[in-house]
Image 1 (cartoon, rainbow, N blue to C red):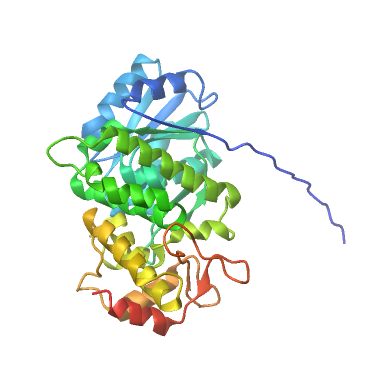
Image 2: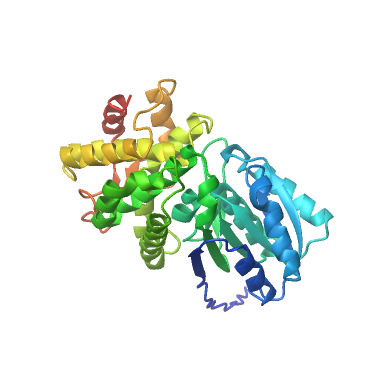
Length: 375
């Protein structure tokens, strides 16, 4: 018998910048022209049917002015399109257009676009560079840091994917002015989640200013938007930097997501991601109160803030407890067929347990009792 050892020690710097500002299309085009994506000479601009009529042509005009060769690829908007099938269609269209390893991807849109385009970039030609141009509060809060890219399956959301870091992220605050109120509220759910898990001062700031982020008679307050966009990035970065591939600490970013993602799938994506997470935040906090990790005042404050942000806090009546509890077992934290939850410690901190883990087993009967109170 013979054994040949293949030594492959890999060192890679995945650092990147997140630029937060207004009207960043020209900046993005100039960065790409200056070599942000290395030697890539063709760019696949991937966006969805909601974003394309708003910003697709604007981006193409700026790319052309900077001497960039780009082709736009669009797919139907919505979480229902975040699938392996959509990814395959986009890949086939890129192949037909003779895109190869000397290409790069621009993800123009929200979280679905960055998830799908980032995953595609990580596998197309065995990996090509990509940048993210974020147009939603949700993607600014959730998708701009961490490099998680994935698609959904009928069993669960974000189940198939990889970690793939962009070359740069652009968060254009001006694009938030074109978002429907419901989309703004959905993005605020992830911001409130970050405040619950890591920053009591951000939570208090939101309690004072949340209405300034909701479209009303005037545009969204830009100073408030800038503050929460930056704070979202900072909070998520500190978690991701300590645990880039979700071995332990990064699980805290799933606060509210165990119930939220299961509910999102069962509701057939009629709930936006942030809406489902909002319900999940309340459910985990109810359970946390039962276990002594938080108190009733914490629950009232979080529920009140979510409602003020225009978010649901109850399970839709058409979703049955048995269905929802069964769907929880598709969560990535499940180990040996045992449900695991992460919990906030009051407001602004997370629970770390005696075994050093940031999640703990939860008996099914306990979560069912909490779900029964969530209608």
